[in-house]
Length: 64
Image (cartoon, rainbow, N blue to C red; front, side):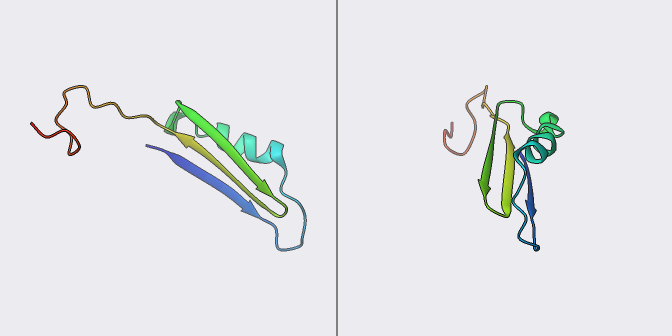
């Protein structure tokens, strides 16, 4: 399962990259395959991604 986190400062303070990295990395169990951070002034977002591989080939994109 993937995970997202974020901050928004109403007082105009800039989002701190280190804070976002700690928030994002605290949920590594939600998605160990990829991660990222977006910073734009007072807004900061982070994500963790879990790749799901259909090992038996029976998913909706590959019906049997």
